[in-house]
Amino acid sequence: MLANVLSPQAQEVPVLGTLHRPGGTLGYDVAGDGPLVVLAHGMGDLRGTYRRLAPALRAAGHRVAALDLRGHGDASTGWDDVSTTAVAGDLLALVEELGGPAVLVGSSYSGGAAVVAAARRPDLVAGLVLSGAFVRDVPRTRGQRAAAWLVARTPLGRPLWSAYVPSLYGTRPDDLAEHRRALAANLREPGRWAAVAAMARAGHAASEAVLGDVRAPALVVVGCQDPDFADPAEEARRTAAALGGPADVLLVDGAGHYPHLERPDVVTPAVLALARRAAVA
Image (cartoon, rainbow, N blue to C red; front, side):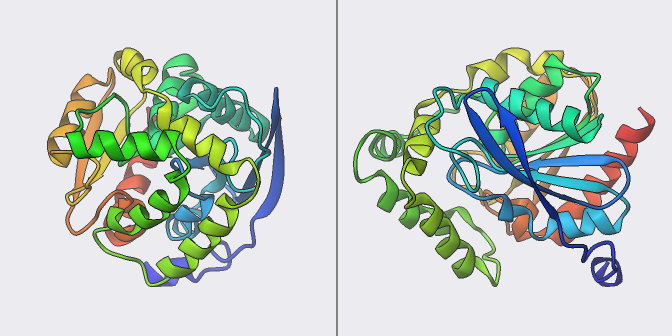
């Protein structure tokens, strides 16, 4: 694996692009040759969350694009709609722009968007990877509901989110401090926190309603120490069972909410296996 990660294709510098959408623009980067994989990060994060996975996918012979969510990263601000349905449209638009079909990889909030996209346009979505994904409105403790309300609806939201982020990791990457600084700087830009807060207020009913319509092969990945789910393993199994196509579950020991970043040694081979299945499905 190390030899692959150090290959010229893995080290190719991604080309930065702009996706024009009704209501604004979205930044993305793309590099590599081969079948397309589109990566989408979670709420209150950056596309750099895929800094471990993307080079390995490129090394294995994939064209890999990482997209900013509405209001995040290099995207414009001031969006009227940041729902998972709207984000699903963004994912499909990028697949069309780059030439699909594609395997979609959705982390956290984007997992629900990837489900909606796969259900809406099966011709464009060859496979699906859901990493710590919210695809329904999961039960919350009283404390979690209170914290979510503060994040979504009060001026305390941004500092609370910044303080909360480290607790989402079961295994902290060596460069987590650098990633947090970049994220904090991005969220301080005007209009960015409004998009995060709007996503925090949004629900996941749209993705839950269409889980059974997804026919593409899927991989449901969850960290065994993910604090966002009362029972991460059960949540992953529930999601896999609800999907309408073949779906595998990957439980990642030592990982929290971002298993693709925390344990790439475990997650990357499983994603590549799913991509191979998608290519022949």
